[in-house]
Length: 243
Length: 275
Image (tube, rainbow over all chains, first blue to last red; front, side, top):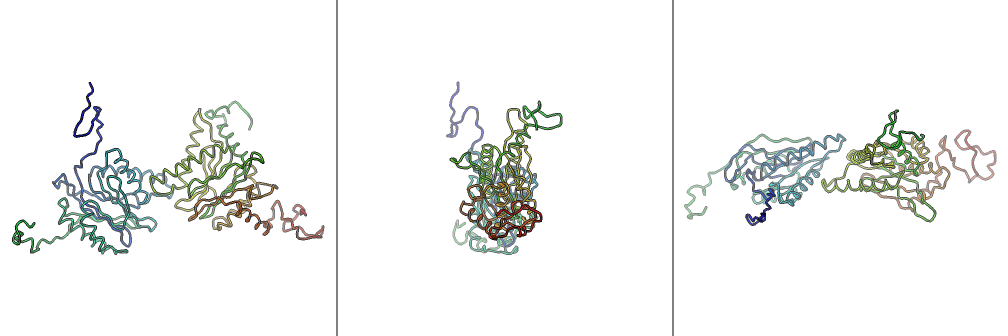
C-alpha cells in the first residue's frame, strides 16, 4: 500500500526524489575581488571548514578559467569542484573550435549564472557564492553569482562575511586605477579584518592576479597579525563580559 | 546531368562516387534569383534581385536579419531558406541567453553546415534546396560565408549565387582586391553594380533589388527603397567606369551629332554605342 510519507515538513514520494535543498559540508569562507589598473585581483584564504572545525588548510579556492578569467568560490567545496569540471568542459569545447574566438569573462559569468539559477529552480543548488573576474581585449570585468542565481558586476565584490566586513573598507578605499601594490595592500587589509573576526578564516591566503598578459596565483602566505592591543589584556578589567 | 538509376534517393552513391540528389539540390540554387555578398575588413553587404510571382504580388523575401551582427541572403527554395533563417535566429538567441554575447558567425555557419549534412545522410530526408550567403561579425572582423546544400561551407571575400550569377562573379573578380579596405559606401556601390550585372539589360530600379548592410558598430539593416533609388541615380549620373570589357558601355547621350565620327569610349573594338 502506498502511503504518502511526510518527512520534515516536506512531502516525500516513496521513489525517493533524492534531490532536495542540501546542507553544505566542507565550506570555504569569504572571497574578495577588485579591479585595479592592469586587471583583476582576487583574494581568498585556503581554509576548508567542516562545520565549526577547520579541517583542511590547503584548499585552493581561486582557479583560472580559460585564458581570460579567474573564478573564486566560497561555500561547499565539492560543488566548486563540480563547477570547475563543467567549466573545464565548456572551455575545452570552446578551444576545439580553434577559430580565434574565445569565451571571455562576461560569457563565463553569464554561463555560471544560468547554471546556478537553473539548479536553484530544481531545489538542488550548487551551494556556492562565486566571484568571476577577467580581462579581455583591454576590458576589465568583475562579477559575482550567488547560489540562487543573483548576479551583478561591480568594481569590487565579496562573498560571505566579506560582504559585511570587507565591503565597507572597499567602498571607502577603492578607487579607479589602483596600482598592483595598492590593490594587494587593500585586499590584505580586508583579509586581515576577516582573519580577526571570521571564525572560519585561516591565516593562509592566496592572491590571484589577472591581466591581459595572463594569470598569476600567488603561493600561499600568511598575514601579520597584531594582538598586543591593550584591550586584549585583562579583557574583563573595564567591564565584566564586555567581550 | 541526366536522369540515371542512382539518383532516386540521397543515400545511394553512384559508381562514380557522386550523390546525385545533393547535386540536384545545388541545381535548385542555381535556378533561384541571384543573391550577392561582399565584405571589407569591417563591413558586409548583401544584395539580391527581387522576383515577384506576378505583377500583383509582392516580391519574395530573400534577405533575412539573423541577429544584429549576422544577416543572410538566400537563393533557391526560399521556403527552405526561411526555415533555416529561423534556425539561425534561434541559435543566436540561445547563445545570447546563455552567454550574454554574440554568437560568432564562423560557429553559426558550421552548425548550419552540419545541419545540411544530416540531410545528405538520411533516407527519410532530402537536402535543403537553398544556398545561403551568410554575412556576419566575430572577434576577427567581418566575414562572408557561402553554405551549400551539400553541407559544405566556404569563406569568401565576395560571391554571387543564383541565376546569371556568373556575370556578377565576373564583376566581383575584377574588383575584389579593393574590397578589404573599401569603405561601406564603396562596398554598397559594388554590390549594386554586381546586381546590375545579373539583370543583364533589365532595368535596375529600387524595386528590383534589395541591399542590406552590417558592420562593426553598425547593426544589420536593410536599406530602404528611397536610399537605394538615390544611390542608383547617383551612379547613373556618375556613369559606369570605362572598363575595357564592360558589356554595357555607358551610352553617351549627351553628344549629339556624334555620328560615325565619334570615337568609341575607352574600350577598343567594343560594341558600337547605343544612341
